[in-house]
Amino acid sequence: MEEEPEIILPPNSSSHFPPNLTQALDLETQGFYCKAIDLYETILSHSKSSPDLYPPLLRLGRLYRKICRYSNALDCFNKALNLKLTVVSQESQEVVPVLLNIAETETQLAKYREASAKLDLCKQILESGEHKEEATNEKASLYKYTAILWQQRGQDYKALEAIQKTLEMQSKFLGENDIEFVETYLILGNIHL
Image 1 (cartoon, helix red, strand yellow):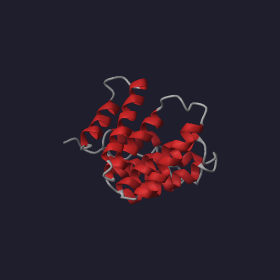
Image 2 (cartoon, helix red, strand yellow):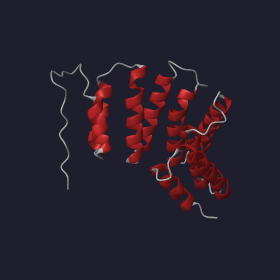
Image 3 (cartoon, rainbow, N blue to C red):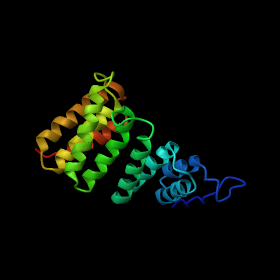
Image 4 (cartoon, rainbow, N blue to C red):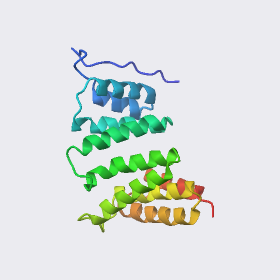
């Protein structure tokens, strides 16, 4: 088993200098989720509230969700959304990624009504933009999370319809060997008709 790397702060670091974000990303990609979480928490604790904290909050929330700490994930995503809303409007396409993460997490917490409201808002935003006809990763994710929500609620036919839209969108911008296709087909395989 590979030994976990030690967290190394940048040279001349002090309590006022946050650790390197790149190091947290490296730990995350290497699968050292708990170490990455600790490092993201340290980064956030040493930083003043600003829109620049949006990316680490989003990544921290995703890590918490990966290790099934859904309440912590939801807290991070809501903080990220609030930060994002300080620089863009609620109708901006820039809020869609965090809203999708909130919806996915709320689905895991069986907060279906709340998740459905977030997905509806995402759909409204994505269909009102200048690129409403384009297949995008956000639109594919919207349909994928909608499929998961319908499946969790026992609405398999609606889930199947949403996952088919996901595959249709993904085929327009992903390569045929992309991992996203595998994940989508796994969801499809879990839908029981």
